Length: 271
Image 1: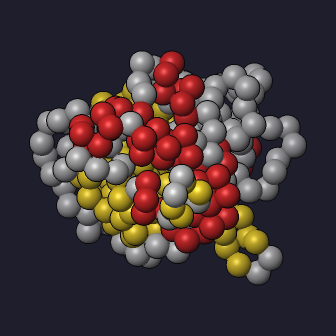
Image 2: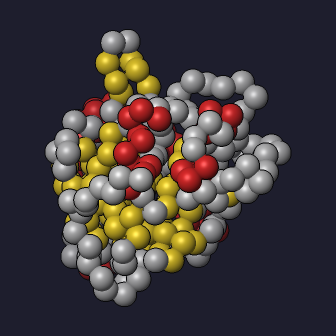
């Protein structure tokens, strides 16, 4: 297998935890939505997406808004951004938050998504404050990340990886997964993606562990990688692939089919 050289900096210090607050699809009733919580070696916490379930999934694991330093947003579907209004308002009006983090929550988002995030998802509920007109910067310390760019958090560099999720007419609706290296382990988190082996092949090969979008519905939507499609991947790729964002109901035996397995709600990976 051809080895790919990394352009991502590796910072060997302590360990980082990655917890799946939920593992389900957008419409799941059983496993919460697929939002993640990263905890750095010094205890800081970053959300990877903040869907409509986020306040409940955080609470189930003993967390609340006062624990979260910031959030990364992959794309603007409600199961990934629907909880930002809750988080933004609470952190804005709670003086304990401002005192703890010395200001607003960090928001990491691709620069092509930032305007749409505000104008098409958050503005209707968050624009009006008593005596003033608010903007996205009112609630968040916005860190816009360019195409082919990265952001640094918790001593780790996170590279944005654009995936094919939805083709809106004749253009792609932007959606970005993450590639990062922790203690020598290269991790690839796809966020929402169609089955696009030609686009993702090199990322799969260079990764040590893969967290991959996986639809299990009997009626495939066409905008998520389906389990039956992922079965066609080479054995060496399936062996390092954990599956999430699945539908409610019975699941196939992923380990018997050569995958690392289905991620369980609340499961933590320590690096």
